[in-house]
Image 1 (cartoon, rainbow, N blue to C red):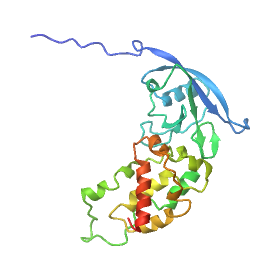
Image 2 (image 1 turned 90 degrees about the vertical axis):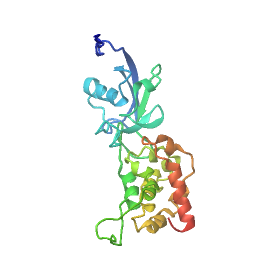
Image 3 (image 1 turned 60 degrees about the vertical axis):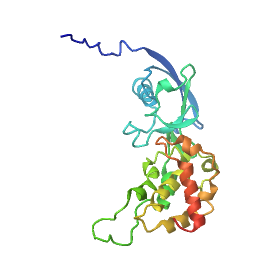
Image 4 (image 1 turned 180 degrees about the vertical axis):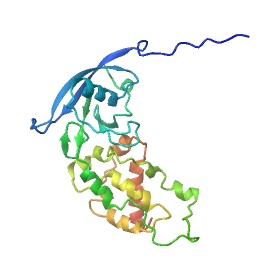
Length: 252
């Protein structure tokens, strides 16, 4: 009987590392009047993420570097930032997927007040989110008194927009949001969509009235920036179009 010999597991010593230059747009309010670019050389592996690079900089080179992160697995949405000019999650962006022959540019997302380095004030974003009433409003009781039955087809109607993790990548990639501080933004509309088309909800008309405002869905210019930026693959532009259609029909 023949036996197979397992090949030795790869170790950090057997995997090639390389030096990557990160250009980070810094802003420390105590000493800076305007944001500035600062470069860092970091030793990384191809499978490292931009978040890993930021950790190495903070832990080994400059402890003053500030950024948000929590789960580090693309679920919490807290580490959204602009990487080489595109909104992405640092925890989901692999170094091997970037052109490392050039510096990797990292900066805070746009359209929200900059607080420090890669951290922005998220309150305007969440203010718009809260305004669309992103929660189930069911006035009638279930027929059997226990649960509100929903078919598979009814659930599929809004399934895509349940994936939002509130990272603000879509909203802060929107040119209208950059220039219009009153626009709800794609994320708020996506979360309104999630309940407008939920068969168990009784307040779809209220949300449609809210989004029928001059700063609601009609400010969308259909540039598809939001759909391209979404780390969860939500068809944001399509969801906005469906809300527009529902408003024109007068019901969800």
